[in-house]
Image (cartoon, rainbow, N blue to C red; front, side, top):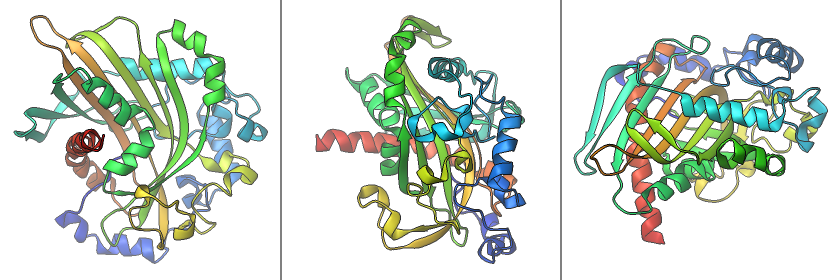
Length: 365
């Protein structure tokens, strides 16, 4: 997830940012998304989610900012009390991963923000879509990385797909904590053969909370995301050439107010007043020196598609093509126009963060 950085305009938004700390927006209850700010109860939020996202069935798209409820997720022992008609696990996974694999940014317009890293020797192209998938504005980043040694693709796969949120918390300076809520490992294992027949292996589904710092005096942000990823093993071809290997990772928001309170209450890092406390943050590198602090958080939303493909073009050596598309709303007092202005620069910097992290892992063995 990519949050806006400090700009001159942001520091001119004193009235808006102070409104967050003056509690002029009604406090969110723990586990309630932006609907809570409009005074909706958890039951109303759940009903809204069910009504607007095709109750209990596989959806045509998961790439929107509308949070999903428990009943829209595959069956799981921990949340079965809130699942009247959950979608089949295999159909759910295939819809999401196939949508992510076919996600195409080729028709998007370039933004004015372009980056070039002379030390790394590659360009980072930033694109913006016209409104799509429910009217959300999307931005994309594309970078090409030489296949310098036989394990470059595997390194990308390890850092960006395997335990994605754990690594993201390590290499992203703005992330001060992450909380793993639950996984669907046992459920995925039951449909493994079906997924393999469709070309997908190493599939993972995880539900996580990510906590981000924003420039003062803005409140910190919390994002509740389902992370679905897999490696595609069948022959494929793109505009860049023949695909030798590729993986896909899709993220979209989840509404925890639709989950059984007895399960989610002890796990979520937020209390009933939307504050994250140091004693609820796990010790370790991901805590980023905030173990003893207490912060009020605003719950935002984002969705993203991340892909890395090892591609061989005609007459060219193989290259790793890394694309990432995202749409988001940090909520609170931060205006959407300012968020959009900050996104291109923020997503460009992630390339450097990840490459430095990969080199660190290599050095550390």
